[in-house]
Image (cartoon, rainbow over all chains, first blue to last red; front, side, top):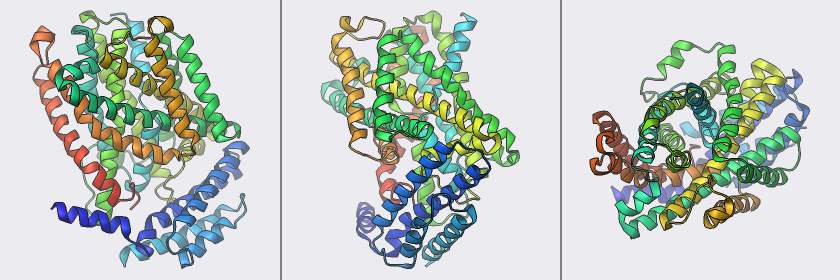
Length: 113
Length: 411
């Protein structure tokens, strides 16, 4: 039992490739969705301009971290995160949700592989 | 029993229940697993009610703070290990709270996050220096009641109440993959740890002694720990349920603590957002005070120093230096640039490991008729105490493997 656990932990710690990138892809997907929600609420006048600005900056900062943590940055999902980062701060919620869906599709296909 | 005092005590317990870890884990658990982890909050709340009541009763009857007991019950060596582990876990928790304060002020003002962390630490320390103990507790606890906006927001978005109520039934969703099951387990352990943080027992029992509780205060203790903690827990559950309704379908994680405030902004607009952020600010500030003081209480009680905020700072000099030093150390951790979410994860991870060592001596003493006489644990406290002790031990053993296997709850 202890050997199995140690092996599982070692595999979890040392793995590379799309499987190892899954947490970062999931994080990027969530950040894109949060950005879309913030922009939607900002457009409806439901949040203060300061909140919208600081949230966008924080989300972008975290996306940059997610991109940096990918073991395969030149992959389909790496390109998707880079394209998301290229979006303007006040990008439309629809545009950001398109990125969210694309990342979710990649996430699901890697999980089921 | 003074009804005003009792009401204030309950309201303080409600407002002071939620901290940065509960904010983060409630929102994430709701978005990922829908209503399926509501029972984990309800279940953990019964645990903290049982041990909180014991801590208050021991303070009132035996006049013994938790760390004094630990040293006598565990012996010097194991006592020192427990002290060190508790100080570390509570320090990381305090750092997470200070980072949380900096972030919330950053969302409110737009000023740099690290500068806001320094400013909030200075304000919190000034309040700890100036205010008497009772008012330190009450100011943050009562202003933390602004968090009630999350309960109002849940009602306003019309959630499926049958599913919310169904979440109170212990369950593991049957459709989960192995990875998701591990993630579900990680969140269950993290919620248990976040609700039952060891600092809460140190702070609550020491607070009872600060306020010179005696057997006459046992009813106040019981009502505060039951009614106050249940209502506080309902706030955390409201955050989870709103997240399940608003964030889950939108594929939001949430990865930023500020996202949680959107739960109130969506139904109530800017006013909702501001009330939510201010409530979060006060609740997290209260938790920062509690963690910092809990560490000062722990070290002072363990080494037999003079302690207490009811004394003038210079009448308990080592205690005063300890709380100032712990607050500054926590700020120093934040100033290294450590991510708040990472600090929150470490806080719950370290704390769950310390929990068994915190609650075992407390339970043994609360059941000792030599100390407690007629107020020793009866069948209900004994049953709950041992049940939760076993669960906490299992959770402590599972915490690190689950953390590693799920990359901190992410997959």
